[in-house]
Image (tube, rainbow, N blue to C red):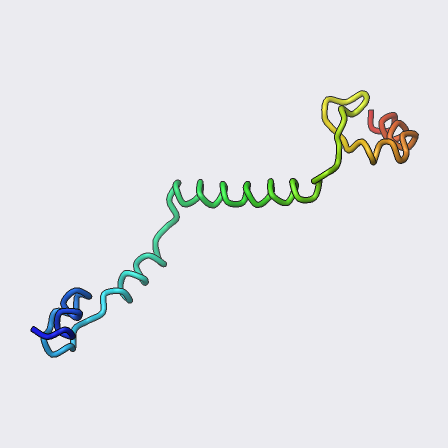
Length: 95
């Protein structure tokens, strides 16, 4: 058995004349037509979550936060210090 025949056998092309079938096309077709599993959905959700966290982190990098007055969440200190009156005006309208 020469080098070419042994490579064909390892690839699944069982014929000695090199005219075997390629199973990779069948496998690719089978995998592309399957329904997503719970694991696939969880991995996709995790990937989306990581991207969102990365965007939020990069967008807020270097900005200090503070507890929002009258609320139970955090806001950027620079935005509040720039115009605190508008923050409190908005707080009265929405509260």
